[in-house]
Length: 117
Length: 111
Image (cartoon, rainbow over all chains, first blue to last red; front, top):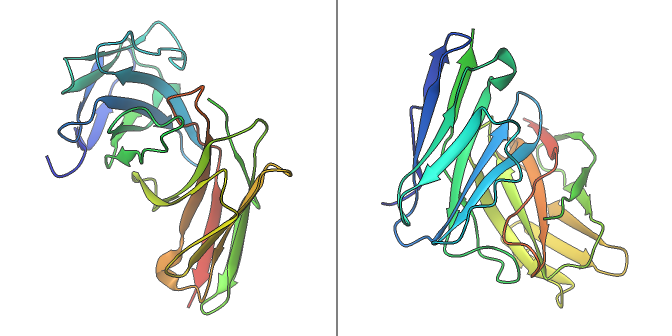
């Protein structure tokens, strides 16, 4: 696609419910990232997928958070038993390959705003 | 990955003035990128500077890099109200494939 697409753009859920957030990266991008940004805060890295390699899950805050990616396409971030502190915007991004020494640009989606009430 | 720290946290200026934001980091890098974020939306890439470069320009943006001081600066000249946004730096090296972002500098440009 033309850019990184995320859905839903907004989600209000009750505490304790599960939510799924979807990300469609730019076609041909092998690297995909999820970040979380709480109101007025910086971005927290959550998880990184690169091709068929094992994902880097080092940023996931708890076992309630999980993510999957099918090949080099769509990714889903799942939050189980949501808590109020999960309220944030969840940003997905993709790049041609990992950034590292290559300096590849990361392209972000518009985010999924999650509110847990 | 390593995280850059932006300074100041907030900056308020008038249209037409220049805005300077700084970034410090801790370990050696291959490159450093600057991104911009409008109102909690996705970040947009502005400019990349490599470790063997000292200065780079793109339109009204000027980025400098001092690897000896492990710091970078972003200068926006002749600022406009539309430049109001948060600005993030992202240092990177070959040991890492991801970018980590700090809290950013929130720039407010008043008409």
